[in-house]
Length: 341
Image 1 (cartoon, rainbow, N blue to C red):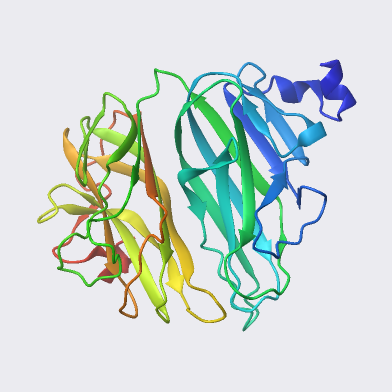
Image 2: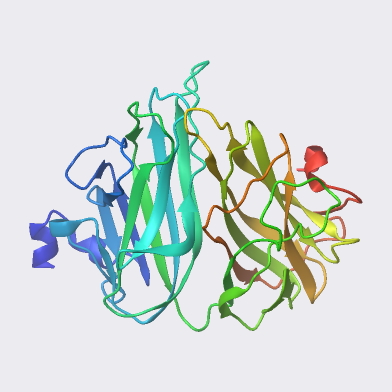
């Protein structure tokens, strides 16, 4: 505790949480908040540090690094608010382990138009990182994802990391796509659902095959999804929704929509991403969950851009919804029925 005090961390910060690290930062490594530049820059977690010392190590001597001290699977959530008068800028947020990019852990939903007073945006990531070893190092980097070089600045970034013991009933996987490289296709075509071939953890409440994740128990589930996008299509937008049940005759989960996938394709802006975080409920055991992608604006090829999508699910309750609970029977595309949210 003497070391923590010497570094400006109160002793309480080393014991206030269990199996969790909660960090915040207002600058990059070196002290600047300027996000310009295509070279990846480390975020410094020097504004706040609260960790369980049995699971993590973090020092203000090098505040960019969070070291895990237990083997196992970790849930990671990162947020980066951004502000600046940059025309059509996109700043990328990405999680790394031992200086290697974590598959699926990338956010590029930070488009700033800098018109009509629109000068703010933010990046978000929430997913599982399976199979870490003691002394692995987690860092978070940011870099410019569009051609404009006007200045944007970071606000207070946050990093939440939790070690998931064996009692946690969770599912995590990555996806290389739907089976069709183009994710920007109209409703009714084939291969509209992400396929989960990169399963990293599969708890007893889950089973996965192809695009289907079976939720074995009735109840409530926390779900996070990340889908990176890239395409040279002016004003393209890919939408995401969550389907419960048979893809041909299922229920669209109310609130299970994400629409951040806008690509302007001007000033070098040809990347974006879609992110969903929320709770869904199943009225019956063995309900299938699929993640559906659909064209919502201009037609043309939009792909994952060489990256992977990801999903994290945790069973959080055995209580199911009421008979009028949060699902909605919809015979066509959920994205045409936004009033159900």
